[in-house]
Amino acid sequence: MRKKIQFLKENFLKHELVSGSTYVFAGSIFGNFLAFILNLYLARSLSYADYAIFASLISVITLAAIPAGSINTVIVKFATNYFVKKQNDKLKTLYMLFFKFVLGLTVLIILLFTIFANPLKNYLHIDNVLYVIVSGVVISSFYFSTLNGAFLQSLMRFKFMAFGNIVGSILKLTVGVILIILGYRVFAGLGALFSMMLGMYLVAYFPLAKILKEKHSDKNISLNIKQIFAYAVPTFVTMLFLTSFTSIDVILVKHFYIFFK
Image 1 (cartoon, one colour):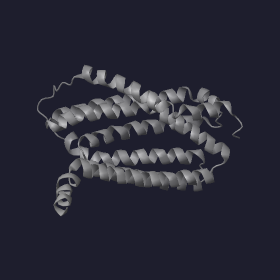
Image 2 (cartoon, one colour):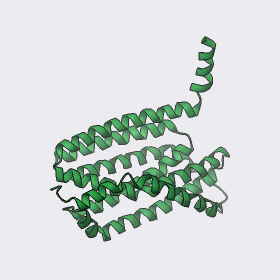
Image 3 (cartoon, helix red, strand yellow):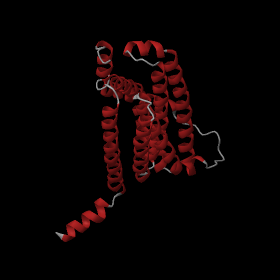
């Protein structure tokens, strides 16, 4: 029996994937606990109308962030392949490719949320158009956080993933409570989400900095863009149907039931 336990300890529990998953799980549990505390604090501190606005904006943010899930899956698939083959040149090229894509996408998101702020405000019966615009900024920060998080996952830097989750969750709770105390109402919840994403993005950057700062002699590194795109489209469609059903109901309720005042 002792030999079996020793074998399990040496060959299973010490495996990088198992130990890494443990770190990620622990970080997620801690982060979810702090998120629960903040949500409870917001529910007790905000009025019914403000909390309804915040809940509807969270649903909008969740729907708009659906492509981030497909981006994460695509990055993990291709970046892991380059990492295993020690092709850091292609890994860096892939990062820069997705960084430019995410940058362009986030600019487009903020622009669209700014242009359609008033129609969305009226549809959700929100009393401040800035809530919608700030939500666009929060979505943009989510995409950048997803970018670095996906590359960390590809490099199997699970400790940094867990640490980033913990740092982001602490920032989220701290900023949210401070903004509520200062009287920023719904902006407190949105600011908390933004600070969490920013913290996770910055923490995740450190283990990636070494690869991104490497200089390669061959500047004409080509990636199979067609293959990446072919994998991304069905992944996006799958994520859309899996996620939309859990978010669109809150948006519809906020639109049709206007007694949250």
